[in-house]
Length: 154
Image 1 (cartoon, rainbow, N blue to C red):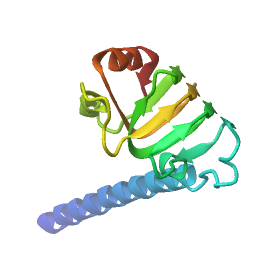
Image 2: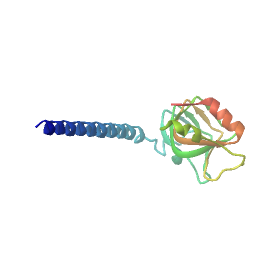
Image 3: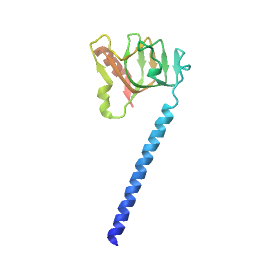
Image 4: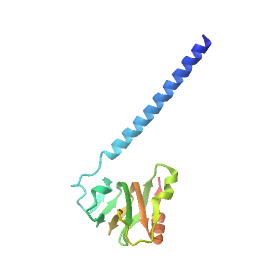
């Protein structure tokens, strides 16, 4: 009888732990869905000044993979994307959202190449008080050093 009671307790704990894990996963997914289901429409992305929007980088690019003459103010920019800032692009107080602490080393990629295939170029843009999700940076040593100075991890 004692063994049977111990087995029932163990089974009850297993069910409880599974229930809690499923609840956490569902809640996390719902929070993610709420955040990402509100992406800006193509029409909303037309102006040069964009404020307080959830924006997919892919929705902004053209055939040349350039985003030109835009100001992003208090926006959430979503990848996946690797981006390059031109000399005329200014970034201030940029928060980088990472999932795993070890991802910090993979966010900034230094290169000596003048151009990078597949990267999205921000040309003559201002990025102010924005959060970047699933986005990395590519650039020369000086550009990466500057980007590290104006970004922080959240």
